[in-house]
Length: 223
Image (cartoon, rainbow, N blue to C red):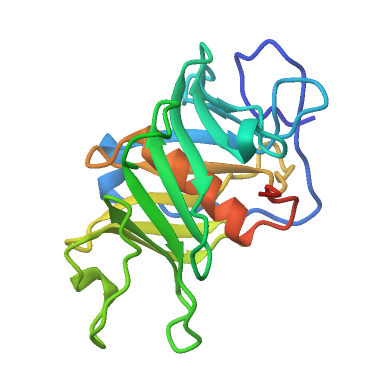
């Protein structure tokens, strides 16, 4: 079996019959943090995510993906410390989410994420806005011209081919298929998250969780 990670203490692997095409390295990837994301919780009978660094060490984990307390998704570090709490925005039109630092949700959110719905610009998946803004704009210009928009996510999450751009259109994070190892390809539940120095890795992983909620094929939170 193909190893998802080299240094974890649990035995697991993810294989698939579909081929995985290695992506060409970018010059900016030299200083990037490359993470392996596994869509599986380390806890028995619990869905979530497990994330490893390039050395195979555990970096992030999500263990309450389906039935979290109060319908929340909590991103934790390797020791179980809450880093981000993700909650669907109530009483709002469309697919809107609020993201809080740590586990406190009785304060202003750090940022919000709104699913982009526009058949004319289908390459855009979502907008990330500051201070709970929804990233909408009354003008016909690009949403990235809105001063509240922090990031714009483009691509296809189903194909594990996404890019996150900041307000200056710099690519600050990417989701890519994980390359085949020993002729055996990984399935869609194992992929790479490449994060540039301009973006926090925890924030990038938080966006992965939200993309999976918006576009993933498996269960979503029932809020």
